[in-house]
Image (cartoon, rainbow, N blue to C red; front, side):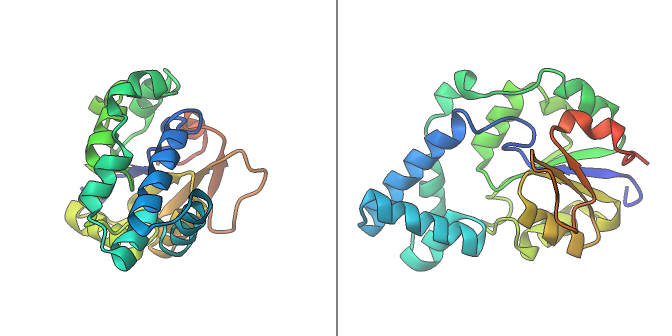
Length: 214
């Protein structure tokens, strides 16, 4: 197993497009949550959220460390739109066939909560192509890009990072992956990618053509 190619996929804006409907819903819910818990107006709450995201890689981490927030309550409250997901998810129907063409194991590696991740995977029709799911709960609420999150997954799955490819839309997460010896794929509309990115693509549908399958 340690010599098998392993694909680690982020979920949001990597395997589906969260920008049109899902991210705005999460952003509104997080803003309301932070404003209520910390006692800020909307603008100050947004600024604090952005600060924690830049510093820790997730708003949740800052709220837990500095405001004593229960992470499970935060995740449940900010993702309470799950009944509406079928009309919110935007994805490429061809994704399922692309994943079948990629040799090796496929693991979803997301900072999102388990119920949300599993619901999205079902809706985009790739649950059967995924060999493992790592969400923020399994990561003990330590998100990417922290080394501890990567090391926990690698240890529990018994993976050699040199056989792993991380496919992500967030460059900071790819920097950590490269430090560990992984191949890195950035999914982005950007024209250029940082030096620690091996492959830049606009869509995961392009993966089979990138020479990464051996």
